[in-house]
Length: 505
Image (cartoon, rainbow, N blue to C red; front, side, top):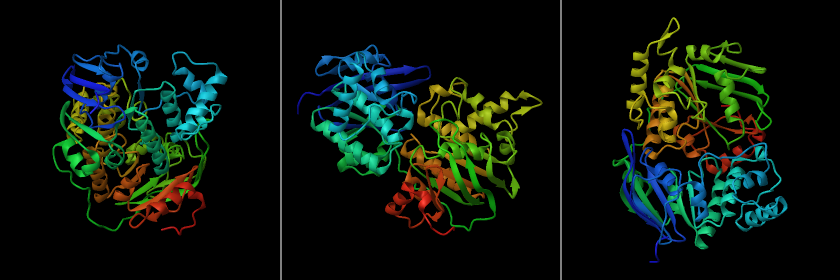
């Protein structure tokens, strides 16, 4: 064994009401792809923020290449060879690839030289990019390439990746893994955070498991099953989501020839979309990010008007119905962007519960909020969906991404929707929470609700959906029974849904 590249000893970080990291110790070798696993709220985010200089530990030490390592800020971390690709991209859509990369460099070279370096490095690592392309015109996978190339131009010793495949197609995942293996072969260490355990098994050489801020185990992912790793993360066996078979009921929501222009220069217009969803049914809509998912949810929820086509609920036209009116009818939604769209960052969880629950939960009367009822509703969400937080007074932005996701999904489900439209329901949540959310969606359908699940997780859609259709460039394929669909067939649908000619089911 060579000396570790990064050695953590006794790292501890506490916040009011919670110990985020408790005496964490482990090491990463040069050229090793090391997974960091744990439930939402296990302490992964806090730990990598300490490594990257965003958070200062209360106690403990770090060593990088056998030298004391205590970065006061990310700039200091980057100067010592530590780079990080965040789960949420930090890119300006109106700027070019080269301009975005320059903004993330301490001393960027001249534009012509930088463009040449971007081309050389991107080609060398199998991530081709045009430096002059506008970021707003790029797919989610290409945007991630921009973030990675920006890191690689700094010649990192350690690359931290947080949920890097959450918005990628299977083909893009393979390209990314090829790049990471090449980096590791050249001696770069990679600290890899993901809830996709089969990807961990395929890529990583070692894994450290956190639970409630403490290291509870380590394993060789290639020799450990995904189920066993999930059990180590949560401390118990996971139940598979299930529901009783039943025939769907009457049509609750339908769209006919729905066409909506793009909301922005970088948005996707909806083109002649038609579908229907019945009581007791889950309709799964798959697609690569940026193909109209956000636009579809916005028009179904009433956030955007319906200029062409029709949306009907129980046979009644919804064209003039506002978002609040639709909520009153029982048409609820949960968008993909949880911080800023689904939840107000600086409002407490109680206040965020009121934002969408006021009507159906009776939290406001004659213009006055019943704060006692609001707090009770927030507490119910926190308890029933296992949201890890000190209490309902905590601001939404203080929660980890996965815990905020559980709160947002729970808030809508506990309002007993007649129709629920949800985009990326398990994005960024751990295996246990994902199973719980999927079971909650199955239970909703079991009890007679119509559920539309928009997701990039194909395994998720095939697990819970009755019918599946694909969204591509704002067009929706004809639905197919989810049972028996193969990945090759789904891949064709995702790549050209508008060209499919399947019979309407």
